Image (cartoon, rainbow, N blue to C red):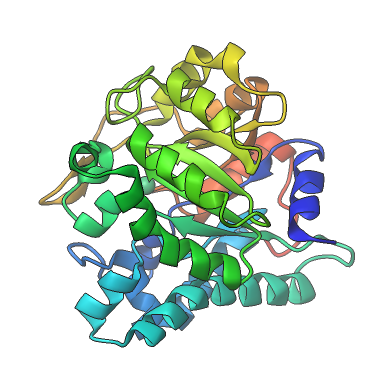
Length: 328
Ligand SMILES: [Zn+2]
């Protein structure tokens, strides 16, 4: 079965698909030093691929149906600039993100899941241009004012080309702050007619994506692309998800689902990183039922959400972990 047919089948199944949490969060929890690195978790594709396999494995153990590659901040230009590698090697590194995730998923199914379990899906992560700029602009989208749709397409094309060629089950356009960049990604997706994707925005409040455009406008744009299986939000506070979905409730095309994977709700500081705060916000597992009722078909976590949170989310939404060896 082709991956697109498989994806539709998965999504028509009972209950939402559980995504993984923040891959970088888990890599850091295991000792990787990513803070301040312009390549972020993508550097480990070059320096420590085993750490990436291990992190994917822990999310699979926690019950994730979909794992996302370590390519959010990966680009040909970034690898050439920061790793001093050839263009060819940079392409290989991008593709290796998919290969590592697929190998881990296949091994996991053979080793840990009961017979007949389905293989988890691999989503190829495509971050915004602002992630390459490494200045926090993926949460403002300010750079989009000076860039054309064509420039965005030139930037994103090699990464999408590599992820699709490496066999990602779908693409994850994620933490996208601007309508213009989203439009460019949708146009690009049409150049890869066998690929499907979800489109997920970074948001500034309960009705707007980061660049100030309304989320409902973003949803209407996404509706026009039949290769998108879901549209939604990620890396925002969990508290914003319900109002955002509500704001565009009547607009979602029947062929499309919501994808939601917020962060823990803690605050990010560009100097200090994530600030652990005393304030308690409702967790993704507490709010997951609400999102499910709102029609979310893909639910998971982003930064600061680790395997233990994903296991809890799964128990909450689906009753149990699929794996008998689900201790995390
Ligand atoms: Zn995040």
